[in-house]
Length: 44
Image (cartoon, rainbow, N blue to C red; front, side, top):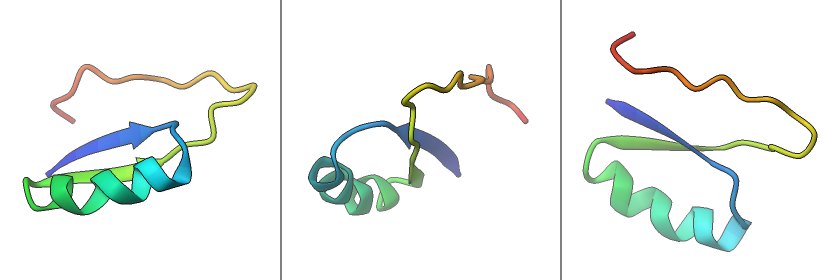
């Protein structure tokens, strides 16, 4: 399963979560304010 991190408003997050789950994509909310996020190239 793919994982997607979103830094968007709660209503947008809730709206896209279920349709993406139906396609095998797990969506997680991430607080990005004042943080550095490591982005992987995938595979692991």
